[in-house]
Amino acid sequence: MNREAMKQQILEALSKKLGDGFHITIQKVFKPNRELEGLLIMGEGEIISPTIYLESSYEALNSGMPVEQVVNRILQAYDSAKSETVDFDIERIKDFDYAKSRLYVQLINRHLNKNMLQDVPHTMFLDDFAIIVRCAVETSEDCDASFMVHNRHLNIWQTDSKTVLSLAIKNTIAMQNIVLMPLGQLIRETFPAYPAEHSSDCGLWFMSNQKRTFGAAAVLHDDVLKDFAEKHGSFYVIFSSVHEVLIKPSPDDSDIDILTKHNQNVNASALEEDEILGTKAYFYHKDKGFVL
Image 1 (cartoon, rainbow, N blue to C red):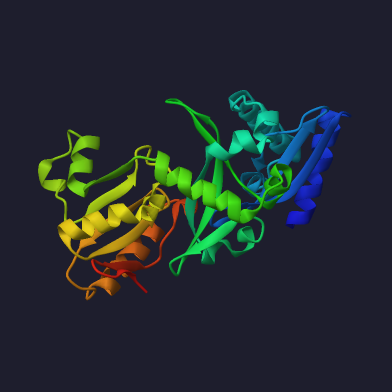
Image 2: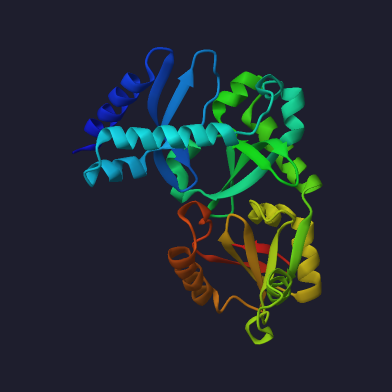
């Protein structure tokens, strides 16, 4: 059964089960490094709804599961997502004076997200990256919810891409505390029981933000990079995931191909698809900055 036939089966079965009063749609959803299909169920008067991704439902239908059972699983996921949805005032987020202090940036791979970048404010960084904007809707010790800013949000806020990007970069640099430590120290602090012989630094430093979320944007703190170069000399930067980068001091870039290959191997074996950021190592010269 092809995708279009499965979509139609799901929509018809859901409409029959839920009855009138619900608007049900399936639309393409662009996530970092991925294009997915998401189901939205909107009740009367609702303006937001959790997105239920349909890949597992398609796989279940292909394996012979009855559509009624697939739909029941979708509704269970929908009810569970609704119960966990962060409660926030949507009207306040529509107010740019309120939202602008909650903007921050995320680094993504520009080559893996060409379609998504057509619909989001962004600016390019180095050869391989795009800086996009997120807006925090709830930030606490237990919850850190945010959404990616799309062009439609600019229309709601009556502003432009340049303004949103400028504010988000300034907020990120001003508000996010940078963590920069030897990798071995991070391992020992995170896993105290880990054998000491397996937690050596390997000459690598870990750089992220304090929350370790979308922390690769820490490289936008050029003053931090310059200060590190003054103390340790030139270095490689490995964009190991969207959440952090690794730094390796080196007098030259003779090992750049080796580190690039290592980066690609880790992408293929150890990361979720939406965590992949870099596919090659970069060299930061202590006197020149990033060498392209």
